[in-house]
Length: 399
Image (cartoon, one colour):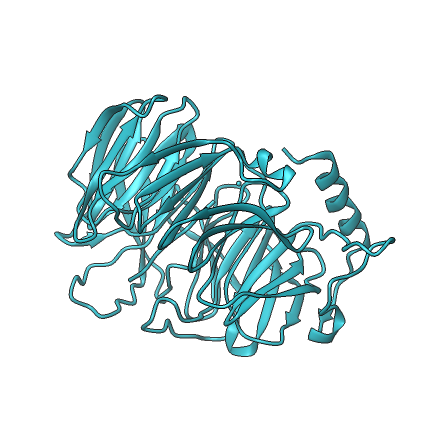
């Protein structure tokens, strides 16, 4: 199994915090002992973290300063936990055994916002809204991330799928809600609801539907086992893969690029396929281009840069910077040592997370985390953590 979860104003407080940290940030390496305990603010409170990062490890979460990579707090949390941007500069959504929980990463503490339910899955940010999909119940919850500021569960829109399944949903700027169709045994496509949750469109020609991404001009795509399904301008369009089985299960989009980045797998029987080709899907022409990178990658290897560039972290340790319009690899950045994707999708492997002009790359084999400036291609910071990390994400302001 592979999975993807994605992602995007600033309050005056958050902006001030970010600026403050930027002015005091320094280069060089950090060590685990540098800042293991939460810093104390005057008066005994916990000092806020500007541009926080959150990394999961077996048994908990690390909260780090996104500028210095100093470890600010260790939070114990048993189980396999996933980390996702909540859509603002302070919070992240944690997928836990019992449901979605909201962590104020800036303050390094959980809020009262919680969405209980079995198998919490994809978290999507788009158009100033955050959408949660709970696989075990089929429930979709939509909220404005700005409403997380009070620490309470936001009031928002909800919808329950006809049947529970491993799905995903996204709300468009006009209030339409696109959500996947399926059951626990079979996933077939997507439907679109109006503001009143009334179905207005449906497409069931997307077998094994998985993942979503939004491109320029609000073209929304979900992946299929035989290509990609695009919803744009009130219409569904199917982009066929060049192979009978050509699975695009994970996608990354950019609001300034009409071309989506996707993975591409062709072996339906493989216990774990390690593809070397990525897909570039042009939402203007409904055409799919394949690019062979000469190295494999995993579902945690895909991201987009600040200029819409496609980013892929290969198992050769190289971060590939790709022009989505031409498919040309424009830059190769040495990020980590060679690695191999583990058979179990829940096991740790190098993970790529991009915020603004910085690419954060984890290196669990060395217990390290690196910050790379995408413009220069240089590592600007590295830290060695007490334990190897698994997932990596952070607070990211929405569109």
